[in-house]
Amino acid sequence: MITLNAEWTRLLHKYQDDHRDPRNQACHKVGIPLIALSFPVGATLVGLPLAGAMFTVGWGFQFVGHAFEGKKPSFVDDKRSLVIGLLWCMEKYGLRVYEESPAA
Picture 1 (cartoon, one colour):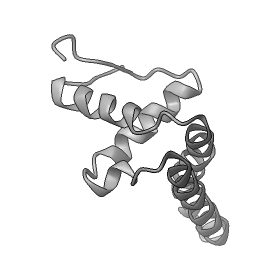
Picture 2 (cartoon, rainbow, N blue to C red; picture 1 turned 90 degrees about the vertical axis):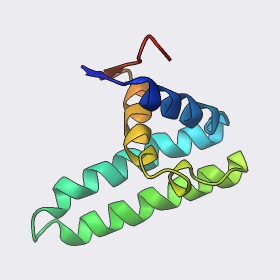
Picture 3 (cartoon, one colour; picture 1 turned 120 degrees about the vertical axis):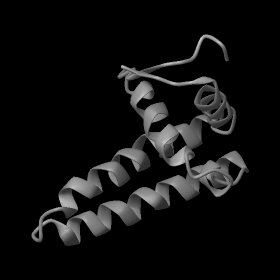
Picture 4 (spheres, rainbow, N blue to C red; picture 1 turned 30 degrees about the vertical axis):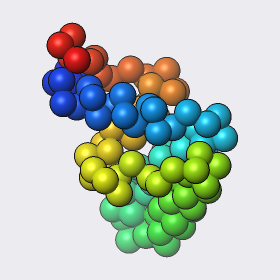
């Protein structure tokens, strides 16, 4: 279990606030896993073309979701949101791997 400090907990809450639209959430629930899984798939020479497609399609879902939400992607302002987005997505799938700081 990862314990998020107060700063990362605030970042998580901002990420949650920026992803309220159910259509955006659905797009992220597809796009984030595709992006994340593209890295281990791409670690093999054989998997490289598939990984490229997964990465590209995953980001496509992300940007479509933000068109629904009407907000820019969170990582534009803070690159740490790329990590927070993965934690957020894991929670959406029922895998809580972090706990928030009680001081947040």
